[in-house]
Length: 385
Image 1 (tube, helix red, strand yellow):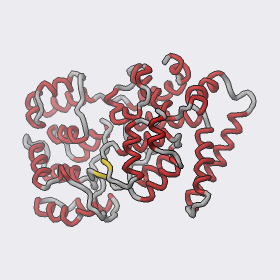
Image 2: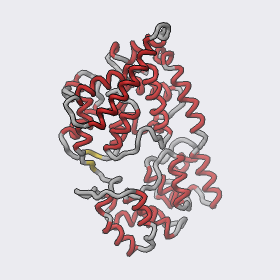
Image 3: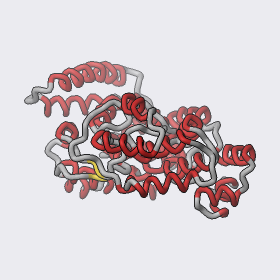
Image 4: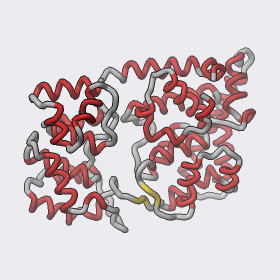
């Protein structure tokens, strides 16, 4: 891995600079300060969120962190936060804000709207989830589209259990964020097929270049079967890396799936992945040009003028970048080594590059495996470390 550390040194330096700017927050210190401010002991907090005092002790001693958005929501409620404070707390710990199209988040918003900080706040939250069957909530078979802003404004008037029940019934077919299963739409399938082309998913996997998590994503997607929502964004991003997509292509993929755009990072790891992807494409513009040429062939018989125009413009820009890349005096030892490690010469690409960046950052303690979290499945050859 020493050779890869040499090849990626400049990219890692840039990413670590960004990490320093983004990593000023310390969860354990924040938790200790909040507990002290409201006079809450380790045992009392543990009782409120229904974990052992040993677990809270590990959090305070920086030996562990709570896992998952739900646990952070419960912790915030137990610490007496209001909705605004909880949203800030969630974002600081790399989780999205409370979302109007997530029924579990809506119950949390309701609980916080009628009172905060009681010893039984978390219990009331869990009881409401159980009462309305929201732990097992699934998407309506024919969801009705509505903007998140409109849904949020409508929910602002919900101040009682009766009005909550009425609102939940009225808007049942408008939830999209917390479906346990996602039903692929034809637009997403067509976009993915542009990149897969005539390749067999099984052949791609047998060749050793397709991680099993991506294979398990593609099979149900192409077959138009339901797939689990959990981790879907990370798997689609991994597929984008596998196909050497640039950030604007990833944005299209995620937008079709109604997920957070790649170019609008909300978490620490989102920022790392975005910076690394930009570095990869800047260092080797053929990633983009080769993709454009391949996709334009697939689109030649298509009536999708919007996509055709998009890739034509990308092709013009990529060609200019390639001309500069190939100009006399541009290529040096690092460019040669990068090509040998992460391009067609090595039968590898962006996925392997991102994998190595993440594993080097973890090995240097710039990132922890917990911070990388759900993106660990994109790893291809982790044993190289």
